[in-house]
Length: 156
Image (cartoon, rainbow, N blue to C red; front, side, top):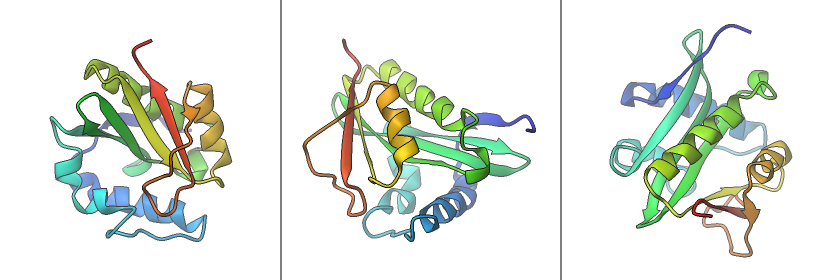
């Protein structure tokens, strides 16, 4: 595998971010929905710009192969969004690297917890979240395509 670079996303990355999200969603028979589940992509520069959040990308040969964002949703809580990894790069630590960076970012912002939502069918991602300490919650997901909510407490 070629050496990849990992960095915060820029506004110029958005078309390539959307492209990866589209491909990953298509694997599950889904599509980008800018009105509900993917409204954060429509408002990317507001949702993920400082001080509201951050968005990371992993890039290999000018192609974005992994994404993940942290958005502030309350005075002490963040929400991890858009965790996607290209099929060709799954199982190589890309998702774990992005997730760790997002958790570290939340800790640096003194957040008490982070939440995320996912689909039942994303079994590999669910295992990664649970191995990182995320605990499934009883609350309902906000995103219309997600069935699970997970929370990670950061202050203890």
